[in-house]
Length: 290
Image 1 (cartoon, rainbow, N blue to C red):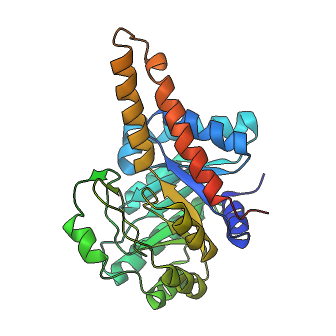
Image 2: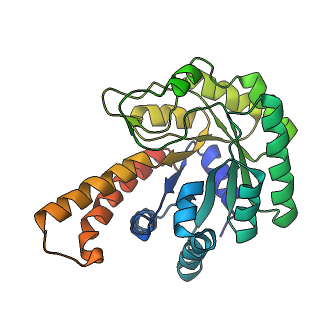
Image 3: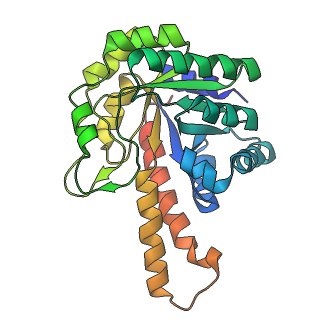
């Protein structure tokens, strides 16, 4: 089995992308893994600080590691959007395969300094760990949005600059970079999410010299995904669409079978609907494979 870094580099070379799907319960993990295994593609499980606090940091590692070892399958675990060195250290020490230090709201200098500190520590513990940096703010919550948050609206006027991306990667030594290229966290209830800046993606990829990660993938159309992947995106994050599928399916199950009290039966439809989302996305992300 290849390392996570090798799988991402391979995807980048093939103009494909690996799906990164967040979880906060075992039902989501079940849905994601079953689809990845069915389609025979590597997959990344993400847990944000709040998600891993809910599940348990070491418990997240144990769940994903058990699937990888039992099935000899390339399923990996990423500590998504970690905002402090201590948070990164906790995930690295627990055995995560990848970590993201999110210093997007810091100044460029502070972001570089803190990201490099995280890179150096992760490398000292596990040279194989993937470390990602974030440059450019895209919001901080995977939810349905009534309106665009003001801070996100402002950031859309100040997307990641290719020259700053080049400098950031050189100074920090990150394996991969998550830029702001028109993407946002969450989905708008009324209207479409902003369009991606494909030329910017291409220039950032060329100047930074590392594969790029697209956060805030929920609400982006298939054609936009394909163009972004062709221009340098090698990992795509999906969370809000999974959460929405889970919620809507659970509401339907409760309404249609009000006397059912077995959680695993109530969750069957939620797992199925999340599987549909994951399969749809993976097929788009891997359309260029081969």
